[in-house]
Image (tube, rainbow, N blue to C red):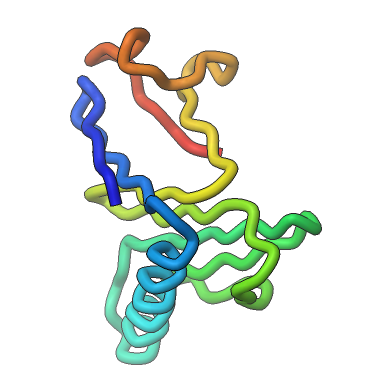
Length: 115
């Protein structure tokens, strides 16, 4: 996994390959399910987008869809500390969605989001 920090202090971690991502995703799902089971709050939100347009999402609010390990287009896990991504994911300026992230156009005033 490689990581980078924006000039505004946001941390993005990029899984290098599908195998690495799926290993972590299994742990994330287990952790969120356990937190829900014991009534503990969690700030994790996991989103898995599939090539057929369907998705799987899990957070403390519950689960939506069905997690599958095949035909994954993108994975996004967000929490208070970091955003982890894999696959077809764009990082863009929340105030100007046409502006994609690069080190050259980053500055402290910009907040970046993923899609």
